[in-house]
Length: 302
Image (cartoon, rainbow, N blue to C red):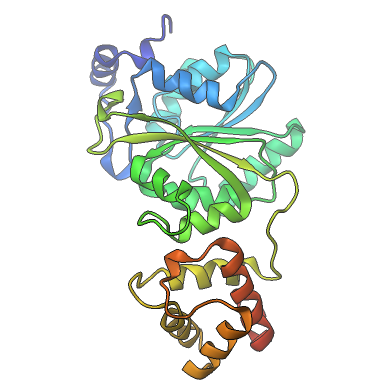
């Protein structure tokens, strides 16, 4: 493969046709054909020779090709066996190429990835053009992983990226904003049009970087409870905070009255008549921590 043909739209169309292949919308297969996008991914991730890079959903291999050219050791995880065969055909003889077939979100596949990272024994980066339909689950998996990642640089849907980096008090601020903030700093690197991909998605895309904290910035005894509680609070965005808390705790079978909620918020000096989207992560943590002291039995559920 020469001259980066894997980012040439005409070549890809003819190549897929020749090999009797087609993209599956259900797999979110949109291949990068924009050299600027690939350069932005590589530059934002600061990919250098000798780096270990995890690539989830490599597809036809346009990004894989460039990562290997940069001298990185690349661990590709591909769900679609048709494209896994293509990747093997083109890259199996390239130094530093590793392929794991299967769904990254499945325990056995993630276990194989984790074992390989342990064998290589370097802190990896993640550089991926993610299938958009599983963006959030993959980000959750990466940030909660038992493996430390140096930097996570992804192409995702623009609106999701905006929610991730949103500060409190604006419309885009949501549960995923708080979730990511608990683990990492997040930056939007650039925005790209649908024409940067083949087939073209119906949305704009963003390259986003997540930089996990070197040391924990935020901490709570049960992070799983915290994330679940925040998600429930954002379920009905227009509800007042005190009502959101009341409903969230009821859904977890916690016997908390409206008066109890008022008392807890008064104690924490957090107004109950505001919307959840006005709270920053520290306020959510304080409320969650207080609820865990009132209902220690919830610790066993998460």
